Image (cartoon, rainbow, N blue to C red; front, side, top):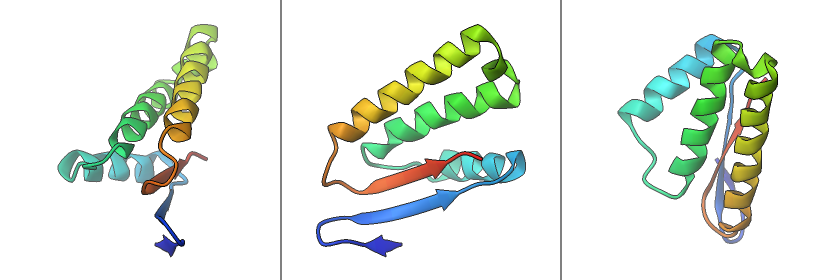
Length: 89
């Protein structure tokens, strides 16, 4: 956990589908009780597309782009709150 003056930052890095799956299981068992739950839900949708390789299609890539834009807009409206950052590799 990284501490800032006004907020805490949690950085979660996953590097494989196995660790992504473990993260999904964890958050399904221990849900986030903050506005970051919306970020998690969008990230999980993108992960599901990646697992099914649907992100490689034109329709799938449009969905991923739309979800990414949604995550950016959510982030802009939540400055000063606790952050949970997901980095997909």
